Image (tube, rainbow, N blue to C red; front, top):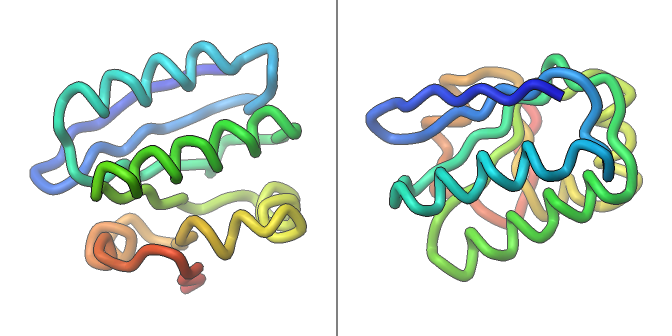
Length: 119
């Protein structure tokens, strides 16, 4: 899995490409740790190029959401492919982490936690 980050004035966007799985967890965790250390108040995880997510990937997202919420920070998901969106919904993560279809909406709605906003 490839992970790149883009820093914006109000958020960091973490672009993922490939599979978010147990085998690739370290790359994701390292990127999240860098964002947490930077003090950024909002992490947007772009899932547009994620083809597959397993239970470990779901767990990482849930843990990241909980950690960010405890630190009064925000986590949002961006543009998951239909299959990945379905998995997120079946795992009830869509109720825990807001999901957006546009970067602008994700940045604008950073204060909304605990509910999914599908645009």
